[in-house]
Amino acid sequence: MEDLSAMRHHLMCPISLQPMQDPVTAPTGITYDRRAIERWLAAGHATCPVTGQPLALADLTPNHTLRRLIQSWCAPRPSTPPEAAGANKPADGDDAVEHSQSQTDDDVVKKLLRAATSPPIDVLREAAAAAFESDAARRRMVDAGVLQRVLRGVAAIASEVKADDPRHHENESSSAIARAIEARLDLARALAVSSCDDDELRPQLVADSLVHGLLDAATDVLAALERAGAGGAGGDAARASAVRLLDSVTGAAGAAVLERLRPGLFRAVTAVVRDRVSPAATRSALRVLLHACPLGRNRALAVEAGAAREAIELELDAPPAGGGGGNRRATQWRSCIITIGFNCSAPGATELALALLAELCACADGRAAVAAHPAGVAVVARRLLRVSAAADACAVRVLAAVGGRAASPEVLREMARVGAVGKLCCVLQADCDAAVKDAARAVLRLHHGVWSGSPCVSAYLLSRYL
Image (cartoon, rainbow, N blue to C red; front, side, top):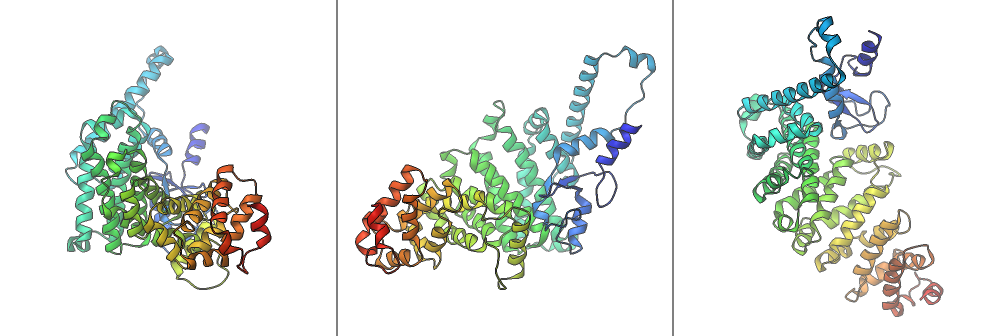
């Protein structure tokens, strides 16, 4: 009985003080029941109830392992006669557990299939938990066509949101719609992404029609929620789920899939960066663009969608604000990421932003976009030698591309004025990779005659290290 009491204590929600049914984990490491923490945030709170650190609904992550443990612990246990219990061996117990798990997985699949077009959200979440935890459950769902059903459901909801279907206002709140979308996308990700490591399921999941169905569903959700202005915690969480799905699928997709990405995908993903949906969603969006940008066509589409501008704006918004200004949402977002360690000036996020700019600068439109931004050169120079070796390599690539042979006199003067030339000189003195130093030295030599006469550049540094 003491063991059961201890187990019950660990499964309690810190808010409701009741056993959790749908556990979600905050970036602070604290796990709550989804319904309780959603009510807490909906009441106007913007902090973690236990730690007091800033918290947004979009930052919550489903704890599938704990959910399965809770379901196993709460499941009714049939009484066993003493003689039967004594006759059982350990191996029989293992077989019984495996059989029970298989029966549970079958029940989940049956629940999904019984619901014609709109499975309840709790059923979708239960199915996602089963798919993440069990290869057998994942295989049963794929074989039964669950993924196709989920994608059709997502497409139907997205089209209705985009059309501003009046039925939503009669039957469901926008928050409920967002939760329904989020649950479907999480299940799609559990089936598609987890199954990529399963050789038996790979042929079904990499078929062009299915992969493009995943991409189209996530893109439609992002575009629909953006157009509908579905902000707030629910809308942000749904957009975060959609961009996570895009991140996973584009990361595993080959060139044949990436070269057929829709222009709308780039606009929708760039909007996630622009709107600061959440720090995690921002990083996922940057990764989606990075996965796609090695292809020249996609580079042009990303630039056209404003990806270069938003990457620069993201870096401008990253440092702690020294004073007022900016809208309330941007200020809260900035405070949140700084306090809980998800700061976009941290190495991971800055490396993603600089790597994206480096990829975009491989085309003329990308170089023009960086040079045209009033702070484009300055923000790249500011990050140089302050983040990591990977960030340094990307920053030098950007400056070398923008300050290449085709650079205009205005761009060269700007590089001198904002300290980019001085930073390139510092690269030659620093403990940087040889290839990075070679790239910096090549730019400095190329425009030595222009910069040596500038009052903003030390002629001594230019002459000494070239």
